[in-house]
Image (cartoon, rainbow, N blue to C red; front, side, top):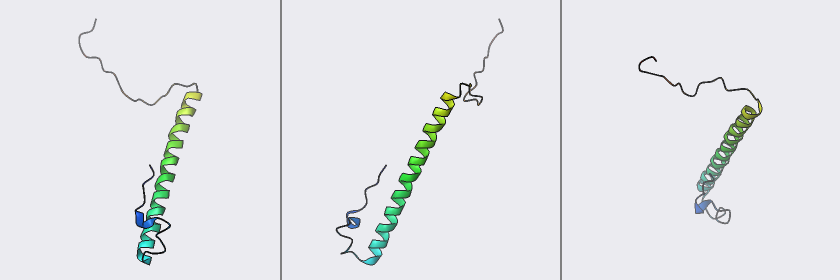
Length: 74
């Protein structure tokens, strides 16, 4: 999700804030961009893996769960 940057990081205010605040704003912006890029990568990866699994026509071989039967034999 896109995080909102603080009001001090608004481009209209950046000329009026101290250089240290500008550096913080630049770092926050970079972190936000990297986070968005990672989310997009993960989303695309999950989407592509799901499509390739459906298109393969082969049953999955990994085990998600195992059913165990307890009780008397019939």
